[in-house]
Image (cartoon, rainbow, N blue to C red; front, side, top):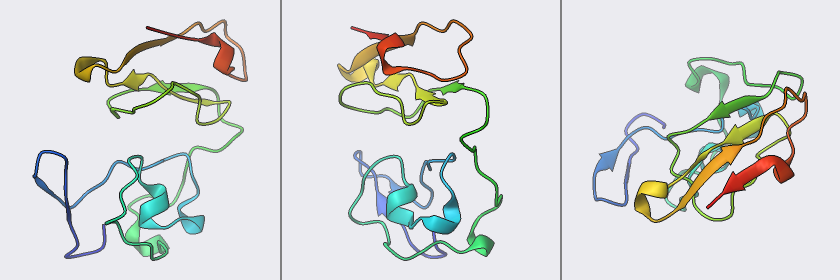
Length: 115
């Protein structure tokens, strides 16, 4: 986040960093749109290259990647056909999610399994 800015998480802890959509081009994003968790209190100002430690992002032509520890909510769905988060907060009454991967180059929502 910009120097000196912060927000309070759901448990009241002061935070100065956010989990970001590392597969999005930061040059086209704001702090609010780059955050995984939607938060109105995040700045809607554009990001600048010098605000990012790394100026690259995971592009659409990269191989499929699976990740977790993002505590998503709602109905499981792919972010993109090569981006899949499997963490839908099962420890907090969310969904336990898996993906049936068969070495396909393009992921499909139909391959997501969850309870």
